Every structure is written in structure tokens, then in C-alpha cells.
Image 1: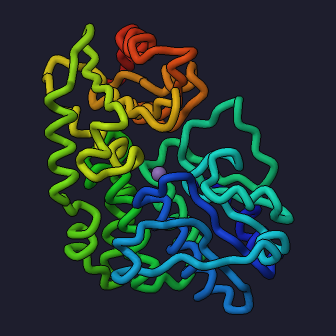
Image 2 (image 1 turned 45 degrees about the vertical axis):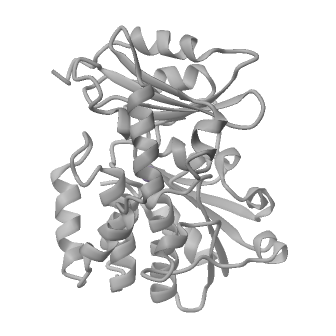
Length: 320
Ligand SMILES: [Mn+2]
């Protein structure tokens, strides 16, 4: 079991706490921000605590909204990063003005990204929400239904509904404990996995445009291909898993989305043990061993350069 003592001490020593997540928040990021806010509210009632960032608006009515926070509050606060490895990757860059920092994360540690603060990092965990649940359980915090539902959201979405590598017996034990807090999962799934007509159309386009190269499935989306459907580049990028079963011989897959100018945002995945993380790192990105992202610039690197590196990625031995 990890030692959470320094982290809990950081909370105890802080009167004002702001909670930040990464850009383009996903279920784990948003779930962690709201869950940690509720846990601190319920267990440290004298603290002022805020969740900062755009969150996931379709969940605001079912779970909770984010907070509007002034520059002064952030500057007077301890900032806690959840589901994000360093200040540079935080969505709201006012995070740099905080008095001090803490973080709870499960991304691959990377030497490019130093962090000056109290860090709780375990890249063996399927979700950052799982680490927050461990802290709450270790310290016997009160876990409200809302906090439990937000932790569940993070664990469910980051684990591909408890199917990806990294989902452990402990993951499922924690879900069982959360279930005893009267969480209702069906309405959470309905929001998390809602397929709008736009998303469905985009997934079909991604599959149709998919190409193969030496065991790599990949697809490049120019700006017009998603604006025509009515999605943003970030929304299109989240549909990377549409490529998962395009070709059953493929060992990894990547979605390349042209953003403004020469910028191309990239999401890389492997469902059978090829560590795409190294490829993302090479281009200045990062993430998880089998799910990573990076940004390339067509003036410097081409889609084909990344695809070639993916094709050369070896299979992990323990993933027969
Ligand atoms: Mn995560």
C-alpha cells in the first residue's frame, strides 16, 4: 500500500484548495475533480475547496457542476492536480499562480516532466479515481453517494468498462465498496456512452478512412472532415477507439486530427500489449503504456513518421 500521509497532511495544512485537471477532460479527470472536492467538503468542513476547469457539461445535472474561481482564490490556494502529470498539461494555466501543489496521478512517470509538490503517483492503477478511492478508504473518510458515483465514473471510463489491462481484482473490490454507497450506474453509463448522431457519423468516417501499415491501423482527419459533421477537433480525437477492430491483425492504432494551422493532435492505442507510450514520448507527448497522445506539426513531422515508429514498437513479453 502506498503512503498517503504527506498528501493528507497537505490537505490538513491548506485552508483553500483548488482542484485542477488536464486539458480536454475525460471521465476520470472530471470524476476525480468532483469526487475529491466532495470528499474534502465532507471530511474537512472548515476548508474552502473548488473544482476548476471545464469539466464534462452533460454530467453537470446528474452529478455536479464545476466552480467559477477568481484569480485571487487560486493565488491563495493549494492546487491539487488530478489525472495529470505536470503543470504544463493542466487545462487552466492559472494553476501556476497557486501557493503550492499536490497531485494524484496514474500516468507514466516521465523525466521531461518534473513536479514541484506532494505527488501520489501509481502508474499501475487503471484510473486516478482508484487512487483517490484508496486514500478515502485508508483514512476511513466518509464517502457520499455523489463522491462514490464520481469515483465510479473515473474507474469505469478509464478501464473501458473494466476490460482494459490494468483492471485488477482491487479495482473490482473498490467498485463493490462504492456500490454499497448506493451509486446508480445505469444513468451514469447513459451519459458517458451516449452516441450522438454526429459521433456515430464520425466513427463511420474514421473507419472508412482507416489505412493499414505493417500492423498499424491509422486514420488522418483534416479539419473539414469533422467540422462538416458538426464536431470539434477534440471531440473527433476522442473517437480513437473506433479504430480498435478495423483490422484484427493490427497490433496498435492511431488517430491523427488536424487542428489549427500545421498542428496535428495524435492519440495512440494498443489492445494487445504494444507499448505505444515510447512513440508518444519521442514526439513530446506521453500518457499510459498502451494509451498515449502527442502533438506533431506537419512542418516538422509527418503522420507517416509516427506510423513507422508505431510499426517498430515491440510487444511486451508479459502480454502473450
Ligand atoms: Mn485517467
